Length: 209
Image (tube, helix red, strand yellow):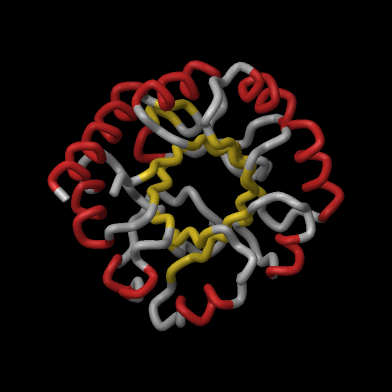
């Protein structure tokens, strides 16, 4: 099965176009202002309006109130919402948009039980836990902590790059991958060569699998 890839933290049209040309099936736009990958909704709107069809656009939010989420939806019109904070299922489900919920992996955390708390989520994204950082840490976590029954359905994030992504696919076999820092030359600015290397590594591993 093809492993789908979302390139997250898009702030420039050129980066979005390169990701799509390389084979990414989704793009992520970060609307969390403390993040170095934050993008103004007007900029994201402009980028999205210039994208080809069949590319899933994702709005990443962190503990936003409902009014702020609705304002982003109205302006940006993303296909998918991605919640990276302490939002519960009811909050995430109220916007009439498919959503994914990010959970941060901690030692001793019952991830299977946490996943059950989000029955309306289209998917669960597993990311690295770093205290005070809701995502985009650039650090990988111990993939063996992922319950085996969940591996084929989750979105794997956290410290992925062209050098370890084949191993991630081999060990976890996730439904999809989410990468941001691993394909950057500066925070919020993608390295086009790294995007191409990452996607080539994914495609090569898919052929082997």
